[in-house]
Amino acid sequence: MPNAEPTIKSSDLFIKALENEGVEYIFGVPGEENLDFLESLRTSSIRLILTRHEQAAGFMAATYGRLTGKAGVCLATLGPGATNLVTAAAYANLGAMPMLMITGQKPIKTSKQGRFQIVDIVAMMQPITKSSRQIVNGHTIPGLVREAFRLAEEERPGAVHLELPEDIAGETVKPSPLFPVRIPRRPDCSAVAIDEAIAMIKAAKHPLLLIGAGANRKLIINALEAFLTKTHIPFFNTQMGKGVIGGFHELYIGTAALSDGDYLHSAIDHADLVINVGHDVVEKPPFFMEHGGKKVIHVNFNSAQVDEVYFPQLELIGDIASTFRQLTENYQHCKGHDFSYFMRVRDRVLSSISEGVDDAKFPIIPQRIVADVRKVMPADGIIALDNGMYKIWFARNYLTRQPNTVLLDNALATMGAGLPSAMMAAMLHRDKCIMAICGDGGFMMNSQELETAVRLKLNLVVLILRDDAYGMIRWKQAVEEKSDWGLQFGNPDFVQYAQSYGARAKRVEAADDLVPTLKSCFDKGGVHVVEVQVDYRENQRVLIDELSNRVEII
Image 1 (cartoon, rainbow, N blue to C red):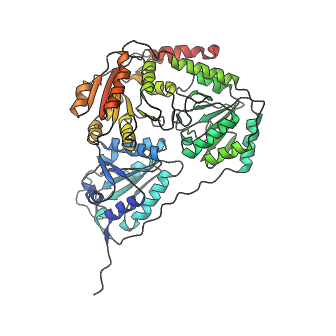
Image 2 (spheres, rainbow, N blue to C red):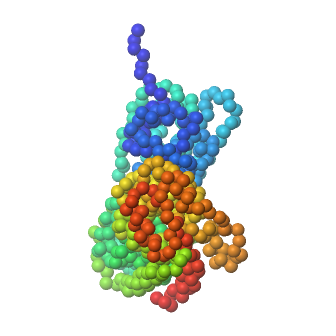
Image 3 (cartoon, rainbow, N blue to C red):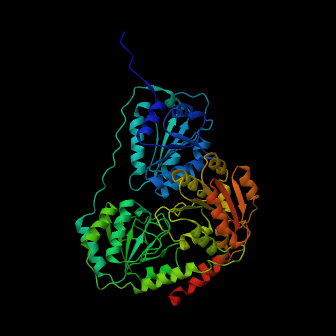
């Protein structure tokens, strides 16, 4: 009797396909419908990182993708487990972070449980992912996994989703060959478009460079630095483009932390040409185009998404690094350029962010907190910001020295992502200083992950800025002269709360104690929570009143 053809369980084939993609970690909370997948994962080279909530697993996977360029992978069961991934899916997709979500489902061939826990997760995920598909045949797994990773990682990166039903995971199939992983070469921008761009730059008197998140690639950074060295064109960045070129560069004039009205916007208003590299319209626009106003050159992997405030006159589409190498090679010194006003703006921006850095008041003002964190963090130290009023202060006042040292979300701008993002950075960079910076509101949305951080033996400092309210919305309420109502809450004792998870904790009670406390935490290693009260009364004075006279000051 001839030997029977070898077979393999579909879940084993899935894990082999993930190993073929170089997957290191899967973050998640498994359920009953994932048990075959979990058993296959048990004997693989991939490490399961069990979290306390699926949302945190998604945030960690997305941050893995953000920091490595390779899709992070997260796992959830059907129904409520999968719905808990929705915010993380939108976070990754809007923020251009490559991520693969794997969810379970009840058997699709036969089922005796009616509609119990059944939600159409594939349909639910489609509007917030690049692709969402159900696996209906185990033989198709290698192709579907390869395609999922290709879609997640190619420009523009984002989230993808695969649903693995329980009966498909457990069925046996013939071993299928795995597909080779290839990195495709992106097309170059045309020489004709490069010539047009050079002509526009030459014709401008006050050209300005805008750097967005899409420029945060190593080869692009090198090409941008060469372009700046040759052209001396000043630059600013969006919040998610922060750190692509460091804040201490002589041509840096600021970060567009506010939508409008900051000193930086005087420079943007003064520019007659903006070279827009890697900016994504999911971020709040740092300027609004008007017909007959400044011209814009759009430099990106993909064509511009045109609307009433963004309609670039020229688009340089293709590999951004190659585009800037061509621009640098073809650029000739232009005597007609005048950057003097931009340099005055730069001086005023730097002067503004240096104000209040030694203020001894307690609760501590935001400027002092930002300055003290900058004193403590080394050049390669990473801060991961949750979403709140402090994010604007750090985006505006914190000067970077290296790329990927400020992790913030200005796309979905969701609360609750700061701690899981910092945890992922701490896993990838165990030799670096990593700090999560959270408001008390955002911290409590995923504070249970302190247990995960302690269990993983991470070196991580969590700085909680306490104001006992949803501070950013409370500020907006004040700006619009509405009643101060509905946004204040109570808090636990954060020191005892952190200690109950096995973390160390400290409450700062004087401004001068913040720096030594943070330094001590980093020196000791492990997971530390530091609570400090923040005084947000500076929001109105600095971000509204003072900036109303910005043009006259400059």
